[in-house]
Length: 380
Image 1: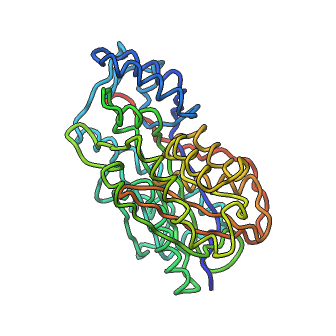
Image 2: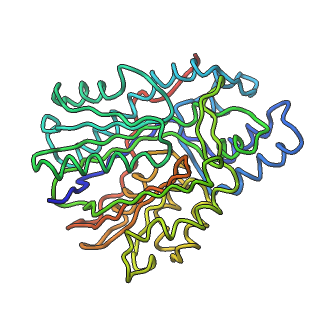
Image 3: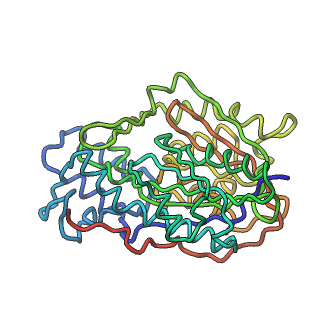
């Protein structure tokens, strides 16, 4: 038996941010230094992000102010506790919407789900969103529940490994994996280059997969993990007093370029080359990361098309993003037996990757991500 992703569901908040308008909002903040006043437009304009989604509708300058922005357009910096309160309110609808989309696309009875794995690094709450998924989708009350927290952008891969282990051990297992991230809860005006880059690329979204033994879909053929020790201080995710603090230095793309070929070598095969694999679902942590990975692997633009499209339409949604890329690749059309490699990068610096094979798949309709019905925020 081989574990297979039977379907991929996605969800985004109602509020869509235009990159140019968000750039102007951050550029206009009082008190930013001369260097930051140059870095902000440069980072936003070079990001190759057109739109992002957010649970914070006050980040849209056309909306009334709220906890994160006053009516005059000045950004506020709520405490970490206040930000987490918003996570407790706004994360569950995204988890539920993505899970529902995946289950419906897979055509499985929610009552048949045996395992539920949830993933998030942008907030904490207990009881967690897993309870909302169980109750609102009608999963069995005794479903096995497991949560992966605070692993960053690569966390979908440990979740998929767990799902694959369950599915391969039990032919009757139906595993639902749900990743949801509210990255914009941690934005703030800053002169710090790392925070400016984070402000320019991160968005909110959720994605879910149904994994079971065999069947049609994306077969999970194998996984690989590599840790780049010299990158430990270049990508990090810490909890501060005014939100979670991202360290994402300009050295990360260079490190990715230097190490990604060796990281994926076990999945490519001894006699093969990366260019032999037609589709690469690379986590779009940023434009420079995609550029360096593509150059290092010697990939044509066609292999990177799904990663580029997701970056433009959604930005970086942390752990959920690589599943959006896989969904885009499926929707674009994969021939039966076609191989693809997916990979993502996280603190450590960690490179997580997996090889998948399309099994009796057909091009899916071009469907927009499900909009979480109440995943928007007003004043607080």
